[in-house]
Image (cartoon, rainbow, N blue to C red; front, side, top):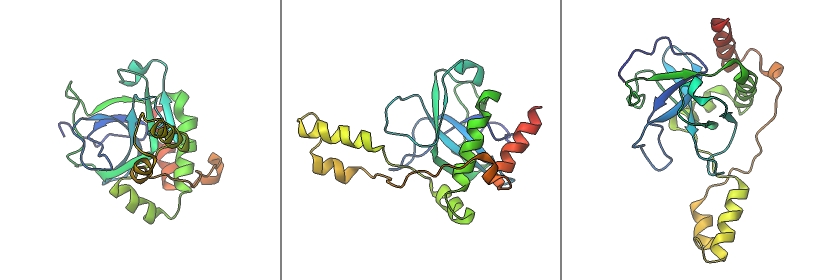
Length: 199
């Protein structure tokens, strides 16, 4: 990591070697900071892909991505996230030598608050944090799985048996909670502190 990160906040965009489910990443990508503590950062996976392979609690920056430090429209998959120490070697500088590349605009804050509430509703905090430290990698959407199986049957992809063995699908729907229902959670407080800092 090439620069100090004491001033990083919720809503900041940084570059990181976000690991794959199969192992370490070779290339850095933009990641969204969802939570900040004295020792750790919670980051979400960023992608420019339009496929359904990575979906869940999405926050999409489509308009004027350059204003947010992004080269192209980017979708942050907040269901795919990682909790890591502030000094973690996977927090790396981009090609311009920057760890911090941008910040979410005001227009994305309502969506970010909703995402914080949905994450907080996933279960006990200590259990959730343990999963996040290992890295949470949700499976592809059902539609994505159905298309793969359809291609397999038509001879354009894997056999349906192979596709089924290689895909892990999360079938439990994400809970929907309004922001007021999670006021007081540490995730929501982190977001409120971020809002107050920018006023």
